[in-house]
Image (tube, rainbow, N blue to C red):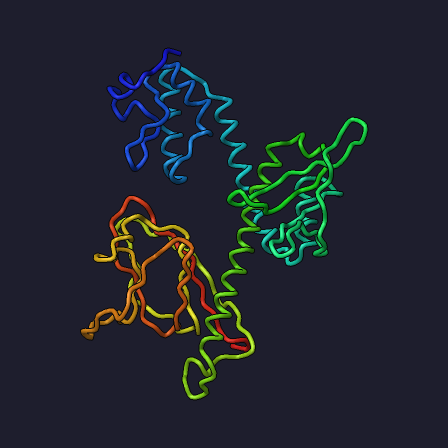
Length: 331
């Protein structure tokens, strides 16, 4: 395959690439047969903006392959295996999130990796060590040697810090694709559990801050505990917004920002911000307050508060998680 230098690449039209992202960056040149074959081989190495972009690029690449008489059997097989792997990971994430106890979490990972002796160890900041299924600190096994075979360890990290360790047999490495799938599911499940813990801590602080006000219709509902009465996620694209509304079935409502577009940084126009106090019907009331979306920020507020989203224009999406909380014993 001839080298495509920057000058030649710049002269190619956008149609000569299987993928052009929202910022105009061009990937996977397909202007001739050698580059189509190269694009087929490199397709899974490209970080696409979303699944829709990936699908458009896949179709465009297959059209180019047909044009040059290429039968991409390996590519199609790889795509099918990738989809099957993603489906397996998705199912396992649900199973791990629903595990309930560390022992059940470990059992489900053992089943997925077909290793009945596998151990799942979770890092504890407070203990400064990995903890086993019983919450006891344990040391990672020493590296194996020819003289002293030992279990192997696969480490999962978060931002360069310890998160989870899998202690397993060497047989697990015979199916590295399965191991990648399972570790991806574990990572998502552990992050989900971590996020839920942080959210519950924030709710506890919010409720504690209400104080004891028996004659206040909101604070008076405070009880010994609470329950989640519903949760959902939302992904708004450019031009999107939530109409002004409230949650009559909740007590405390929320908005957690997973990802936000760059335009929300403008504190004058406040595009994409959540606003409070403006009803859905016209009574001449303007919003009392607007809060800027920031990744990782959780906004808690009374469910009776009118709230909505200021529309935004940006190529990136606004992704949020929301839930309602009710006092314990609420029916």
